[in-house]
Image (cartoon, rainbow, N blue to C red; front, side, top):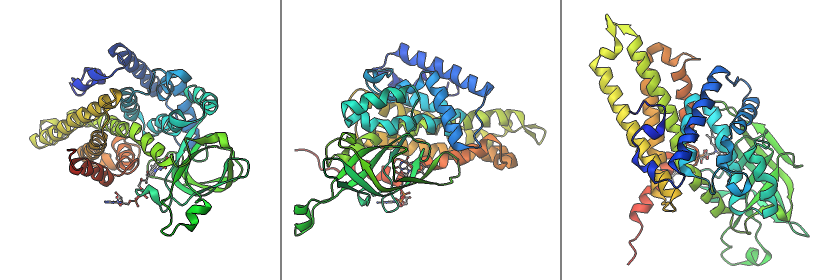
Length: 405
Ligand SMILES: Cc1cc2nc3c(=O)[nH]c(=O)nc-3n(C[C@H](O)[C@H](O)[C@H](O)COP(=O)(O)OP(=O)(O)OC[C@H]3O[C@@H](n4cnc5c(N)ncnc54)[C@H](O)[C@@H]3O)c2cc1C
């Protein structure tokens, strides 16, 4: 039954293919059920997005949920980060609050580059703290002139005598900006003297760098978005980075950034599923409760048809998301599966939520009502970690790639 809160009971066959055992995933859902019930009894005020994020991170850590964003070697729950587990967690959390879901995932998105390619000493210093909720993490890729086209990055990493680099540039739309203790920043490597002299100019190379939240020269200007969470512009004014805080080899930055987004992309689809779950349950309850023309709205065939359309989309979206997650967990990741999952799940969740707003009538657009909040919360998911149009480019390229002979 698609309205069963327990996702593992929804007949989504692909989940069975996850290398994390069924028993571990069931235990995870039990934890999530208790965690979300406790949160409903004792909600976190979201008026101050930074304070809410810190409180959410502390509660997620207490429940052991942040252990799913780092590998077991550094205090994590599983040997490697499991996409299926990430998806289950985000689907449950997003039902309660978009800000809660963002607080969870940023701990992974912001620390996974260090898991992928950081120096062992940096991994040992940072990752156990991430699992324990002792640091807040950020991932700084986007720039004013480099959104979908990340190779347009202008932030420059200039080598310093004795190793290390100096970072100069501007990042924007950086989640957790201002409250983060840990940033992974991507930058263009300054061209070498030989490259400067090259006749056609050298192809830009990019690097990844770990920067502490209190590093001198790092300045944050908050940005207000429609569904509040801490986010802002990060100016890097000659921020010094020690050699051992470089993440990966010089020139590896782009593949680290894209590899990190690959790990988390399908989970954006799962967050959309959580928002759609909530929209569906709110819609069903409202259609049964609200009476017009002498009978419940639920008795109107036109509204039943509308509900059937969004419910069918919702099941299709879940199959795509958990198929892509299972494929990644089994080492069969492809570019098109997560792209299809994110594209379809976020676009169909937007339709499901719009339907909830419509079913609620005037209440649907009233500030403080759940459909109004969901309507604001879903919107950014079609934009961040690759817009819907960029997902279509990825799917198109995968289809049109010349066949191997
Ligand atoms: C709430 C939120 C949180 C975010 N958090 C982070 C974060 O923590 N870290 C981080 O680094 N970034 C973050 N981002 C940035 C996000 O990843 C970018 O906004 C996104 O990649 C799009 O870039 P852009 O905003 O510059 O849009 P643009 O790239 O300017 O795109 C504008 C429009 O043009 C379309 N478009 C662009 N190129 C093409 C093309 N080739 N073909 C067809 N259509 C195209 C896009 O799909 C879009 O509709 C966040 C954004 C939001 C909204």
